[in-house]
Image (cartoon, rainbow, N blue to C red; front, side, top):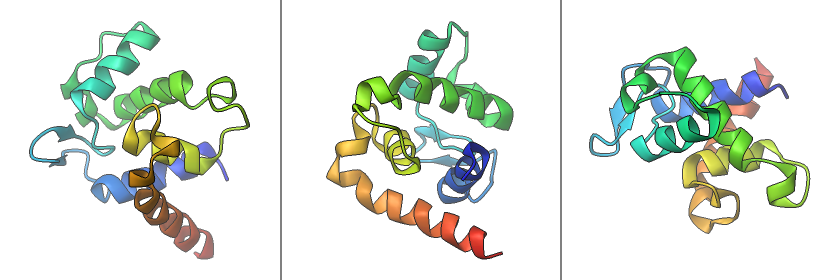
Length: 120
């Protein structure tokens, strides 16, 4: 599976493709439903000046997510090769999301979208 396929599945689960989505009681913005702390973390790592409002731009939102994953979804951090499940669960649950029970249901949703899209 390509990274693009995974990103599109995350977008589907998070916002059903709505770049202007606002969720989580007003705390999550854009197609990937990014929180301000996620954006700030990724911006710091990438040396960018992204703000929370940048999450409403799809391309920038994806860049933010990729920077976040470059920081946290790494073989060095996980001690093994990174999987799509790891990326999805880190996206949903933060740097240690890949091992939180609270992100398991989120992965099931993402996996379901991936499987449905594979059948098309």
